[in-house]
Length: 223
Image 1 (cartoon, rainbow, N blue to C red):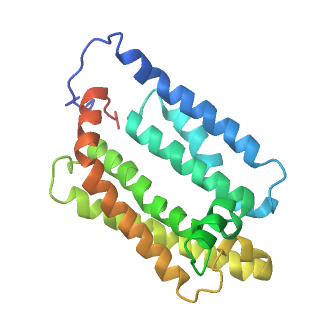
Image 2: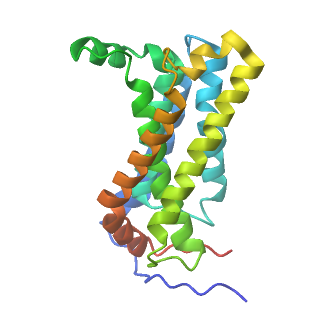
């Protein structure tokens, strides 16, 4: 039996045109940014490990778009997260110039760009998970939607830390640029805590706007 579409549908208007074109523009910008970031990176393997999510995710979104279009809010957040990953991959997270400036300006004990990356690792996936659960499960409008979304983000953060651990075991000292611990023995715990903060803030700030976007798109998964 085909899935019942519970989202209201309206005829497209002139105001909808920029919204329809935005994902295409963002995809083009991400592809261009990815190419630029791959040009003479600090370490090619580190670049690949940091940007593999984009290399897999962007084609996947394009291939599934007709069946499962994403909201513009999620597209913008994914593009922003991709930018953070590309910059970190090009320079390595411990040597991003903007982070060096922040460290020197505010007398920090480390380059904070890695912390920004892990905040984004919670902030953006929170809306991704929320959108997937809202459109493919009975959790839309449920009190469980927010806590389960945060749990999913924490689970992903933990899996990523195991991914870093595996890279350290396999690559040894060669994986130091990818790990970007900068001598902090609590780096793993800080990374997961930042993801938790990012996910929580994202849901508190963006949930209502996200609901309006979901209603406006009229998109619903057919699976």
